[in-house]
Image (cartoon, rainbow, N blue to C red; front, side, top):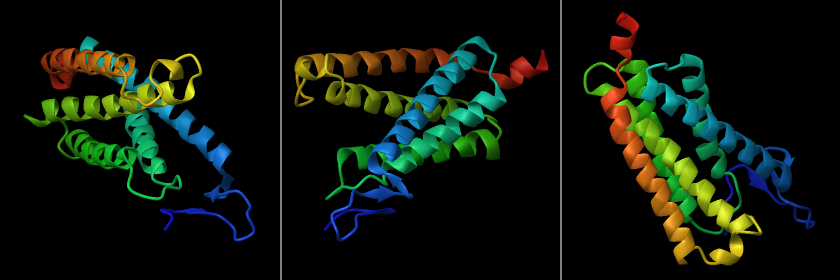
Length: 182
């Protein structure tokens, strides 16, 4: 049984179509959305650390990151994959970030809950980006062809360590109410 949400393959051997696009076109769109999420997320993190958060960039980051996770489920798969599990966790984390920011307006504990959940969502995007880089980039693939070799593990641990350090700093530094009062 194929795991398709909105993807289809004709009975005549034509390539799979996702939302009316070829698999190749849909993949490119998914990657572009993912890169927008990562880049805008890095800008949001810089804003958290420097006290210059932008509502527009934050909305772009959250929307593109939700789209990245959601569109990941549209790719054809025979079974539930680790990427699906990361996508599910990411969507839950993003729901928390959205609630903290827009429903609870970062009041009280919702400030640090937002910071942690937003950074966790960005981390998941970067985690998948590193994994995809080792799978798809010709110069990285030989270093970790199965994704369990030391170079892959070192890269993922480095990304995780960076996000933990940034997360600690962001929780300490991000106080949008204080910045708005000045």
